[in-house]
Length: 151
Image (cartoon, rainbow, N blue to C red; front, top):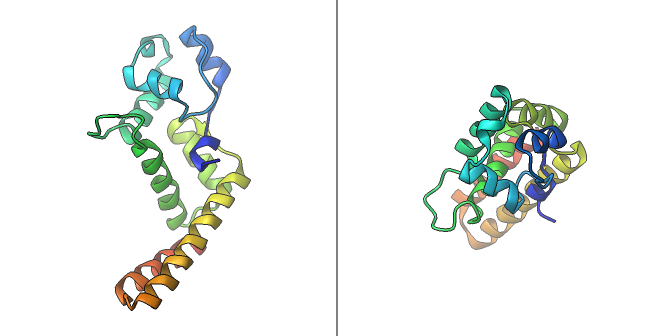
């Protein structure tokens, strides 16, 4: 299961009630993205919720791909957002708190920790492969990024 499959809409029931529609709990589920991408029903949301939903759409659904929002760009941008929060020194619980404040989405702390751990392991593999291939620049980039994520 991908990390972004474990990102959930905060106050899901309240949001569904305001929209008078059933929507999945997953923030990156197809029906949820349809709602955000088409903008149908956003006028039914209270101002605070609408602002956060629009921020989410603006920050993660904005790309020029023909298959937007199903192109993978929203998920990639969100993962980059989480990695940037970690590089700023935030721990898993603080990352969950920030994503909830910023976009009204949340994840379980353990899922964030697993994602960060997997990211560090991938960077270790990139570093090793770059060393074997003699690509010192790539090895150093991976090593630097790994240090940022490891804290």
